[in-house]
Image (cartoon, rainbow, N blue to C red):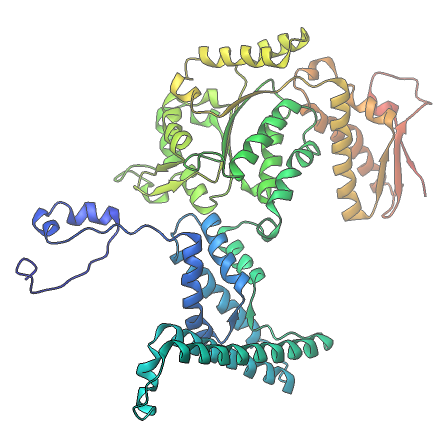
Amino acid sequence: MLAEGKLSCIGATTFDEYRKYIEKDRALVRRFEIVEVDQSSVEHTVKILQGLCKVFEEYHGVTFSEPALQDAAKLSDRYITNKLLPSKAIAVIDRAASKVKLRVTKTNDESDTMKRGKRIIHDIQDIKRLKHKMENDDMINLIQPHTRGRPVNNASFKESIALSLERELQHAKDELNKVKEELNESNLELGDEVTAEDIASVVSEMTKIPLEKLTESESEQLLQLGTELHKRVVGQEHAVEAVVKAVQRSRVVLGNQKRPTASFMFMGPTGVGKTELAKALAYLLFNTEEALVRFDMSAYKEKHAVSRLIGSPPGYKQHEEGGQLTEAIRRRPYSVILFDEIEKAHPELLEVLLPILDEGKIKDAAGRLVNFTNTVIIMTSNVGSEKILSDANDNLPYENLKKNAMEAARSHAHFKPEFINRIDEFLVFLPLSTDQIEAIVALQLKELEKRYASQREMKIQATPGAIKLLANLEDDDKQYGARPVRRVILDKVEDQLVQRILRQEFQNGDTISIGIDTTSSSSSSPAQQLSFQKLN
């Protein structure tokens, strides 16, 4: 029937299903003209939502504000990566309308003012539907039976009706505002309108991105990124500045949107802030450290371990469970991915990373495409650490340090040129100075104080002398950078506080000063030289 032209047929399918089921049948393909339909733009999606919202308004008994429709298109386009426009934006407004309807249903207030407000909202919906029908129908066909044959100018009649409807709509909106003012005086709200805040809340639920990050001004967030990172990462100005610039470039859409937001190789000795910078970046970009997806590459030394990242092929055990990396990003597409000590991974794992670094996507073992364009990829490496330490002790300029570190990376057997060339930035982390160790001690003491303040309402104050004493690490510990600091504070400060609390020397609500015990004659241990005094 298709060949004879007796049947008119329109079919819809996806590219994958077309290749799988239809393309192989050449006779069938010849009978159809292929029309590729791209996803809608944000602007076009807003227009689609403006037309469709009337259906959802009638079904759910709510109204949509114009900013809500615009944000539904913008936020879904940016943050929902596993669906296409306009489908994902339509899903957002439907879900938001449902939430608002439930919220209104739970309202127990049935005052006359509330009822009047709901009637006005329904009137507004009726006027909007009539305006939409008038804009899309031929008015002459609607009114001709009532004109007794007299000629009617369709354009002028439309204009007259449009003005009348606009006046009625404005009057209804004014009345609705009066109702809202009356309800506000009683600390009530009508709640029938879907607002931009409702849309942001739904997108937050769907993407697991905190609501604060969706509603916060992104420009302000990016401008303050460097300052906020330095509140947690001590020193490493070159590395922090490079990370900030790379993220800012990508977020202002000057970067390649077909690659990850940024990719870095952090090189340097242990305990200098490489992992802490990754944690801080995840928290500041996505408001939670749970957005950090961390892999210890020492667990991926064997060839078969590669399948744990992207999943086992069909027919193998645990095939349906998916890969640890691909499943993590499918669930949380906005993440910072940390590959710790990347040089310890099997060479084939680096081959798996190539399409992610180059194209921002990869197919898992089940053939599902996983999008990495909204991730920041960080790899840490201790390759060349001894050379970095030596060069830093010789006070070489940072660019020379970076050049030598790059040479060390190129000479490593696992790091092939095609892998190195796909990484945006190689960043060298310098050994920490004594002053920087002291700053880290102060930061960790502040975290300790926050815990005691929240749990026991205790204030803990450390004198500069006590901070300097705690930062004076043993010679064997200095090679580990700041890592021993946490253990020193645990042993020399927190354990001492706990013992005094158990002996009831310190009570909830006390202010404790940690200083130097000037009466102690022993200098063999910082614990013997620290004093703990109650100030109140």
